[in-house]
Length: 229
Image (cartoon, rainbow, N blue to C red; front, side, top):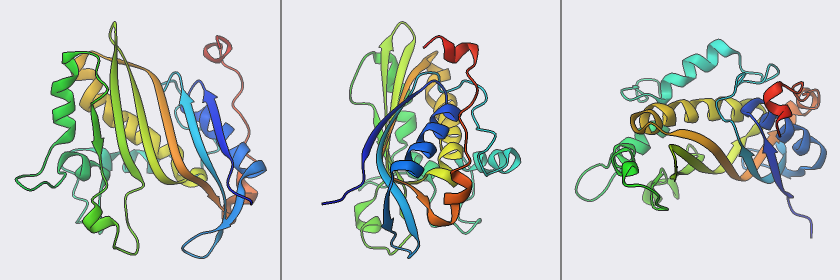
């Protein structure tokens, strides 16, 4: 029985992680048809990043230009009018206005206020709304959960879980947006430094239309920071 491989990638920064992941998916990803019709190369991935804010955060071969990424970062801010932009959902809205029986829950605010209590395995926020997301045909959130744990001495780790990721065209900008938001909302208010990120994805994929360009992606040259590992 053929199935998508599971792969662990360990990288120093985001750009290094993206290049490693693209190279692996192109070489070893299972070719599988998507719900939309086109073929993709697909793996299950665990990506560990040791210095998530190391520059450059964007790989120079990432296809989305820096100017467009800066515009995309607005979607990770409070007050972004995602409905006006015609979107069906917004990650930030799900995190700060998660519906409950009594009132919407600002999960980020709750985590921010709980982090000073010290080490805990319970600080997480979710996006999936089963009564909505299980039954619509498209436009469900890819990001499912973020989990943050203080480690003592001003350090913290974050894990993020995704059901699906467009690796070539979206992963790098997704992570820049998420990490920028986490730094602003959770880390800086608590004087915490993020020393490890674990990014898990059920279906990390590259669409067939991008295979040729993705095959040209090269790892970044070794920097002094990378030489430490």
